[in-house]
Image 1 (tube, rainbow, N blue to C red):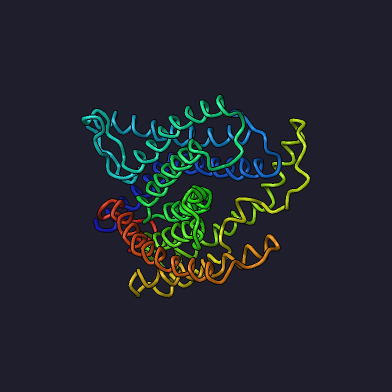
Image 2: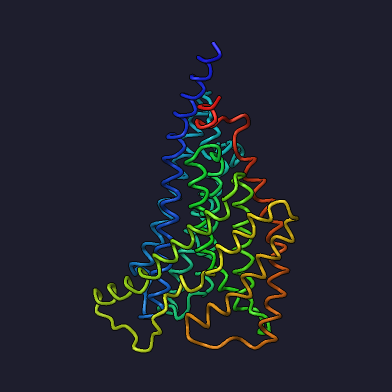
Length: 372
């Protein structure tokens, strides 16, 4: 009887994995579409310039949020219908269901977050359309409606990570968590550009913001994927994204410019905009996080913050062929990097713990069942 029960439990777990995998993959695919649209759009601004609300990179951004939002809505409606029928709601599909609008809807928490991000993207999209109607094409990427759009997509990406973290006991859940965290990390390197609005000083706020997000997400990955290698896997995934986009971004901008009959600027430096924003030292940072798992999170984060803020100026000097920043700014930014890294390390470890609690209680993965 014990063997029969074990086989039945294993079969049930195997059936639940595809059921959770399909909608989660659609949401993740939508966020990846948004990331591709973003790197294309930024390169378009850099290499060509004029755009409208309906340029192809913009439409790719919008379609990514639409795909993720529709998938989230479908899951919420199906969960609500199942609850009203009195059926069992499998918590592996996006997490436990929570009541929305006075319990009118039952929404798995992961899909609730991704859906809210997609809905807010729609509102900011309307603002962006109005902005374009007033001022024409955007001269910069960090216009007010763009920052709102980027933050909305980031919320959807957080939901995608939550959806996969719910199934972290399964291999597909771990893989999706890594892919989702890598997508969010690469995307956030553009969102922090909004920090340029801070008053000028000797500290580079964009570098500090990028440092915070990198340390936060790498530490979170190490926390949610309890086996060693979670942070390193995210760093490798980000490196692959960076390598692909290094080729794709300028190529896509040139091809689209030729298609619509616009010239490419003759003074461009040839450096892919978004990939160049991603720190190339992430694998070193991830290795440090993995080695310092037993060390207090603040110390681990501070080490990661120092590594990034000390190496980013070297990266910029190498990529752009420029010079190093002034010594006082270099050291001040490194000091701030250690501080924000410490904060990010503490938050990242706590967020990793929170994501682990999304997984259903007493959930047994197919891999564990096979060894039972």
